[in-house]
Amino acid sequence: MAMQIALQDRAFDLRLMRLGQIILSEASVSRAAARTGQSQPAVSLALRKLRDITGDPLLVRSGAHLVPTDRGTELLATLNRVLDDLDRVLDPREEFEPATADRPIKIVASNCFGLFLLPRIVELIRTAAPNVTVDFLRMPEEAALMPSLESGTVDLVIGNWPVPPASLRFAPLFDNEIACMVRPGHPFARRKALTLDEYLALDHLSPTPQASAHVSPIDGRLEQLGLKRRIRVSVPEFSVVPYVLAANDLVFTSGRSFIEHLASIFPFAVLEAPPELGAMRFYMLWHERSHRGGHGRWLRALVRRAAREMEALKPAATPAERRAYILEPQ
Image (cartoon, rainbow, N blue to C red; front, side, top):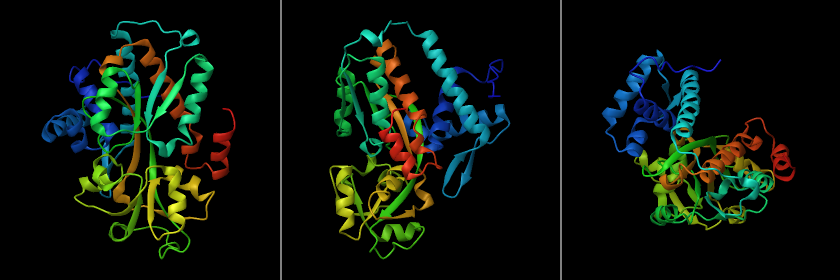
């Protein structure tokens, strides 16, 4: 049975619930502080209060990072559900009928999961709202993102930055383990894993140039650790990655599902990434202007459903099962 939040405990107020949601989503006091604009001591105090209320540590250390306990994971799921319900109850209702809607949908999305997540989103939208057109847009520079959301030019962002912009609404979608990939002739091709020192000593291929490292889930994490990898080549599209990698002794790093999909098509070697990199976290971002609207609520619920249904992200899924997820109707 899911944990029930003890609302009779006045210490567990709405502010603590929302802050707890961010702390557990980020699994990091420092990142939660950066997102909320609060000091780290204030966020640490909130975590301590949550631990006192639940009688559980909620976050525990695993190597260089924190991971949620079973009870922490359960609490996060409960907070997500309760806060979503509260928002729906407290917000003025706006009627939205997807079956008759014809308003275009524009979604900015990190494209390394385009093979898995976006086809299912399109399928769900086409089924529920057949008259709607859908545009998936390339991730712009961070400075251009906020004006697009403010103006309504963009409805939703699916991103994986290390720290989401604190000025936007946020909801986690899924985590994916990070892995590395090299060509068969690479000196490390027969290795099973890379240490952090080895990783930093190698030359890297990245879809994000070094100048934009802070928005990369890999380089942003290294930046938090005070480290920097050697990006020798950056490319504008993920589709170019296998062709560049096949001819060069470079390392490509991404979510394991995407890495293993490429390795099922091309003869690449897959290596465990240094554990210090943690996991790649994907989430939705949207502007306050669309938070209460029926259209925005419907779209976010649809994306949540698509993320839940991503069989490709299950660790047990084989490359063949991932291809079936892409090619077969769900």
